[in-house]
Image (cartoon, rainbow, N blue to C red; front, side, top):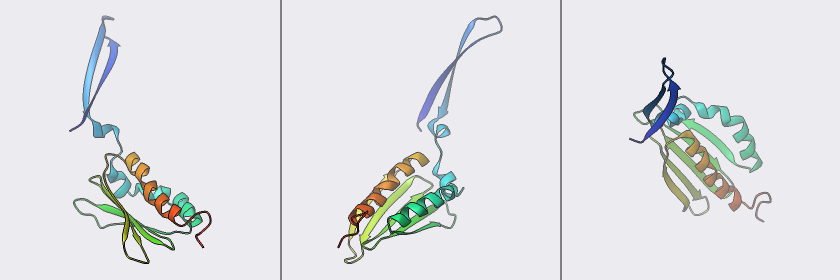
Length: 142
């Protein structure tokens, strides 16, 4: 388990300096994926994401999976060339996959083990930008 140690300095009743140390698990300082997934925290980002993906001419759908021991959410994307999916589990596992529609071939795949919601938000653009750039955005390929 990753731990973070912090220190505080104060004066006791006799005005003598007192140093206190505390050790907490690192997860106390990070937002777990459970808030994003089971807590449906990703809902608050939908208006902005839907608008952006529409500008890229992507179909987009968010699905919260049935609760299990390791609940997940899926983000599905469709462009004229590709089908993309991001699946994130509360455990921190996250898969990014893109298939080329014309051949059915996997053209992009990554697996990540995330420790926080911030890490999820940092890797999500990798799939989106791959799909966007392949379409020649802002001008679609001829």
